[in-house]
Image (cartoon, rainbow over all chains, first blue to last red; front, side, top):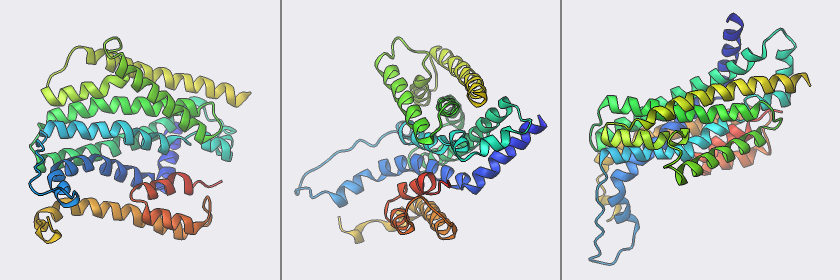
Length: 258
Length: 69
């Protein structure tokens, strides 16, 4: 445990030196906040940019507060995922490339501790950045549109956060056996896109898919209640995270000894 | 609508914090670029990228440019 905390500390220190603690939260804020602001100013933006003929009237229905918050979450599902994968694609592969992993692993450090400490460090960064970003978005929606109950916000936060964690774990998994950070990032992105596309196309049959968590979080914000399917998705995500993490430890151990 | 007709008093308190954190991101990237010894590729290219590619520029710098081999 002591050793694990040391590794986690090293991870957090490294993220500070990489400025990850600064740029990842800022980017998460920017991604989420653009949505309420552009939605709010859309009529004025169109007025000031478009050369509309006189008398042309564009009636834009003002989106509801819930719709805007859902749109923020959807932004996370594209740009947010990209940021998560970009920021964590070198997590193990990069260290292996530079030889740092070898330096650490000649010491009596367990492979489990090495991988899980890395994963935990990035999870910490992800959840803190995601919370700040989503909270700021919720706050802006509250100012510009309408207040959404905090309990709805926090529940959708946790439901959707599970999907982000799942994506992060996929990246860790690909990191465990690939040497190049770029390849790990690319493969994770491909896997995530395939998951999203499949879950979107066959949504009736794969209600348990972790990629469906976005739509569950959205319906939760819109209606304040949820179908029972959400539990199957939550359980499967947690299970998937544990399996992927376990798998990456096993593969990492094999690869490193070989 | 002319620019002068835009209700700035109403827009600034809402948009200013966003511009501010964007500037923080940009400033940190530039400060780090000045202080760092080696980057991936020529430094002046990164200066242009950070300054002129909004938001994405600094991110690209932190992800690709700073990679120390």
